[in-house]
Length: 53
Image (cartoon, rainbow, N blue to C red; front, top):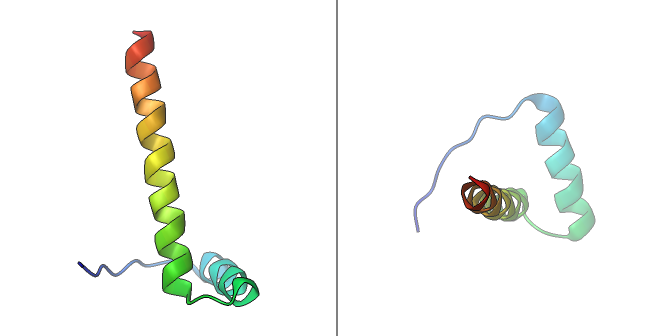
């Protein structure tokens, strides 16, 4: 597994810390899941746009 470092502004970092705390998960897991979901949504959007052209 590769490890990346991501810079977040203070308010974004605090948001993900709170979500992680509420879910009882590490912040890294919450960020990873959020990025994975976003990647999937962007991929589906790109596929949809190419199908419409």
